[in-house]
Image (cartoon, rainbow, N blue to C red; front, side):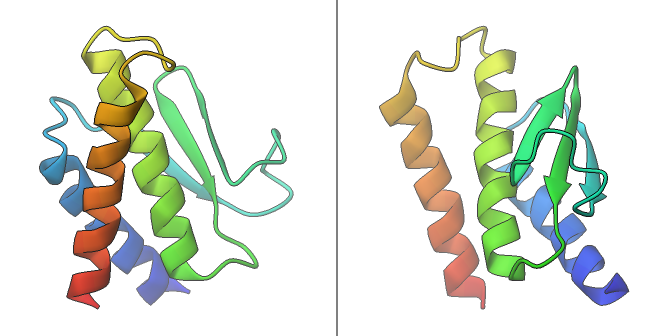
Length: 102
C-alpha cells in the first residue's frame, strides 16, 4: 500500500505542475470509514480527501485530477460551473499524460 501511496503523491505533483497550480492543497488519502461524504473525493476548506480503499490506482488518479481542477478554478477565482469545458480539457490532458506514462 505504501508504494501505491508514493505513486499517488508523485501523481499529485505531476498533475499540479501540468495545470500550473500556484499552491498545492493538503491531500489526505483515506479509507471508507474516514470518507465522511461517501464520495471518491471531496474537499473541506483547502484540504482534499481522496478515498483509496477498494479502488484501482488509475481511478484514484482520475479523482485527484478532478479535485485539483476544482482547486485551479478556485485559484483562478472561478466558480465550479464557470469555464467547465476549458478546465475539463486540462483534466483530460492530465489523464491522457498519465496513461502515456504507464
